[in-house]
Image (tube, rainbow, N blue to C red; front, top):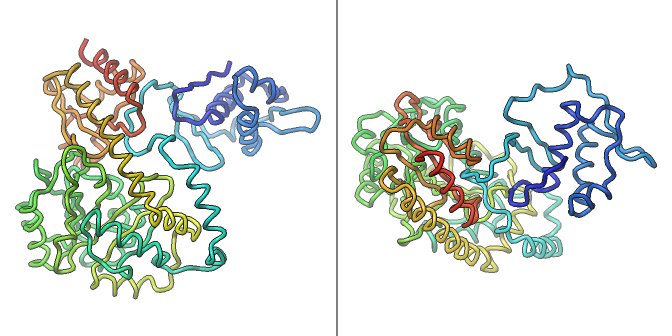
Amino acid sequence: MIYINETSTIPIYVQIYEQVKSDIVKGNIKAGEKLISTRTLAKNLCVARNTVENSYGQLCLEGYVINKPCSGFIVQDISEELLVPLKQNSDIILSSTHSYAIETEIYDYDFQYGNIENHKFPYSLWRKLTNEALLSVDKEKINFYNDKQGELDLRIEIMHYIKQSRGVYCTPAQIVLCCGMQYALDFICKLIPKEDRILAMEEPGYDGARIIFENNDFEIMPIPVESDGISISYVETTNAKIAYITPSHQFPTGSIMPIQKRNQLLNWAIKNDTIIVEDDYDSEFRYNSRPIPSLQSIDNNGKVVYIGTFSKSLSPGLRISYMVLPKPLLLTYNAIFNKYNSTIPWLHQKIITLYIRGGHLERHIRKSCNYNKKKHDLLIRTIKKLMGNKVIIHGNNAGLHIILEFVNGENQDWLIQKAKEQKVKVYSTTSHWYDKEKAPKNLILLGFSMLSENDIVNGITNLKKAWFK
């Protein structure tokens, strides 16, 4: 029997696909058997017929079934030795546009960090702007290799946006568009001479950034994060030639670097001729105070590389980020990447240009900030009400996640397992420590960007039952 979870963020056609595929792999549906017709299954599940057709189409694409005219969808013979062994707790799900790693256990509430609620994306407007882009006077550019740094019109819009919202001062020539923050970091790594590849990085820090530096043969020097950001005194004892930081909302602790420390860090960079990479990944989301100005906004000596992204403010699936290079590094970039082509399709760039130019991004961010503030405040209130002084909340009042510290020292592995028994998924923070042995074992990361307000209350209620009976 196929079960549809109406509250799940997983598309219905993927849920159907997953369960039919699982039955085929497990032998519950034998080779040669005919699948129930799309019309009948759609009627039984009360879903649109094309939803079922999409599910069956994916099964056909991957070879699990074949669509025989006048016969329907017939299950194919799959040799066991050709099957990729399934992990005990997960299936790999492939759709036409995404790869999903979905645990077979159905979680009622998932406090993941990174993805965004499906209904928040402006689908109708995006379709309209796509048509507008394809009818624009420069539509022929879709057939060209375009500017390696990204379309000039979009770089101009980004320049105005980050000047207004983050105080970043630059020219369009300093902006380079990239298909995601990690690709931006990979570009930056290649601008650093091999003999200077010594990196000061926050401890804990974003592991998605660390792996890029490691893959480019950087020596990682973990720098402790204090209550107000990275330890400057510790940085000053190193011979690092580059530093990677998240000063406006440190990931994952949520600490904010004050102006005094920012000046100290810039002075260190000037004195030692080093580069600072400022990852401003979610600066739009400040809930009870004004946004913190960027570090780049007070850099008068060309020491800061600024990285911004549309992943949190609009959608991570767009894969559009940008970096602002100081003029000395821009010369190096042009020398090294002169023959490279842009990593972002022209059509996507044109749509984003129209989106920003029409004032839609500003309105979207304002609405998203208000919406996420309600969820954030509800999350904090619910935790305080149900868990009281048994936990300490870190990193609140900004961003899309918080950290829970358990004052009685409960181990995160136990916490994750007990939450799982209540069908709630929560996350370890250990991966964000370079030195895993020093990672505290009593921390849990809770993201809330994918949960509704009702889900937040119900999820925290279940966690209270799991952890504090």
